[in-house]
Picture 1 (cartoon, rainbow, N blue to C red):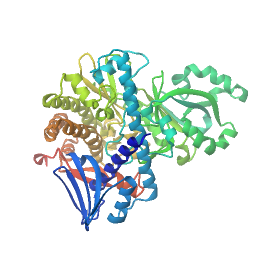
Picture 2 (spheres, rainbow, N blue to C red):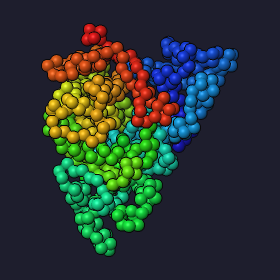
Picture 3 (tube, rainbow, N blue to C red):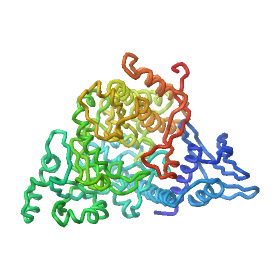
Length: 589
């Protein structure tokens, strides 16, 4: 890590902290905040924070540039680093940054600086590779992905999972992974694309709780790693036990070293938990603790007792039950729209122990969303707002050029209409027909581009983030069972708000902010396209049509106050704020 990367990362996290403080109204009530003429000015009792900005758009998205300055009276100084900014906010604006939060923010700077350095390494390696392969120097990134996808050892989806350099587009804790060291981050974070050997552990069947979509209790051994059955039998033979009496659990190597050997030492001593020397190669997806198995059509969601962004990433025991159960009960529903599919979760298991212990020794098996058809190019949608190392453009710009030949007001509008129609139409139908909002944000959503006809479609993964209106779902599927009460929404308004946050704000809002920033697009014109698509998607003859219009086209939208929640050390209990809604339309109220 160089000082240049450290400085850049530090400044970017400063911006995110300052924007979050403004957005979440964390400054004292008498503070005067002004954003106009390319400058943000924050004044309070003779003190002034100021910084230049380039672009300001809906959902409080601001692209800042240059140093933040701080003035008291006639004295002005540049804010040298994140810790200086925090000290100013604590001392002179009365904000409560506890030491744990400061550690988390500084760890985010570390992670971001390593990520920025990795992009530079990737870009340099790519430039040399293209030069020596005699490929055209002006090669489009999507065309390059299509070309590389012809190689059986390359996956476009896997490559894009590892190029989310800036992480969550607005979260100050975007790259926090405490307590990982710098070396750990480079070993396990997706940007570094390292192979991670998942440890194979055997758990006695009497001490596990498992749920299988097809009722195969030994699903992992029979379906995921059938080729390793003989090796496991040979390894466990000296224990004078039968392999059939055990279940296979994959364990992340960091979790094994730092949690399993200490917390489950008695289980290991009594051979209820049997570590083996066998491993399965995997790489991390964007979600960090979800691993895609190399050469096998499965992803594995694992607990890693690490704080990534705001939460410690273990696996809730109830999600190991509801993933397979909902996959079975909803499978016909979740495959009925050609432009949107859902990755099934056929198996889940956890150790039979109190929930706070069991969540450290658990897993969910998910069918890989990877499409082996060479005419399909797949990418995680979070990469669309990141710069790529091939043509050095932001990926959505490369994509629009690939689809339409050039990028201008007309092609941008066409792209937003096509993208939002393919994504939102089925998601709205799921809400109306079944009362389900899938958590289709940028981390969970995979974009598919058909090379032959250039149509767009999507796959959504992670059923654990969905929200359900149980009464609506039960009308469609009377015998549906839901164990995880956190999936069940208070009412249909909460379900619609999940869609609004994940899709309108997180997916489309960040795309529009970039297009306004880079191409000076009329953002309101693009939101009008989204409004038109939503009107087409909402079926007035189906239930919840009025609720959808009332919330999606209302005057305000409700968003999570992420920094405020960390100040209060709240993870599960949400603190929310209201922002202006760019889709607001009086005539629907």
